[in-house]
Image (cartoon, rainbow, N blue to C red):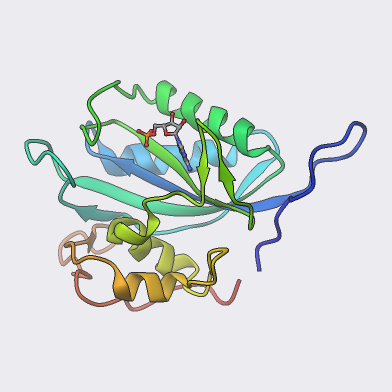
Length: 197
Ligand code: AMP
């Protein structure tokens, strides 16, 4: 569905274009604005384009509760960057947004994670793909389900199935329905996906 670039880079060979899903999160400053800016910035990375971006989803923090609610979104990109290049680019965007180096699970201006990179599996000291927190994070699965519910991880599990099985956690769309957020804590959201991927 989303072809991977499994083959190692070779000299004089054009890097392949890979589909990747990126998780975005923020709970400091102006989270919605920062995520919108981050989605624009993703689209401006070298050899990278945003194909789809979810709406914004508000949810209470995991971990320490003495911090503001988070806003999360998921974007589908195409990129010719390698996984490590993509991670470096995301860290650059986090720093440009003024990400504070804080405690684990602590508040942050912008957090960007690589959820999947084609159908590659990676386990290095700096990068784990697919991201290990996917199945536990309704705030990732709900926006992901919105834009690509039929996506499957390399182990065959679909985003729709993972969302069904995810631990309960209140997640609300904050845009464009800011005045009447839709609760999706117990049930998958009504999909507004733009078709099969
Ligand atoms: P975080 O606190 O979420 O920004 O993650 C901190 C570190 O996790 C980063 O500096 C990365 O080296 C590492 N990491 C491992 N796997 C991933 C991934 N799939 N996406 C983003 N960061 C990752």
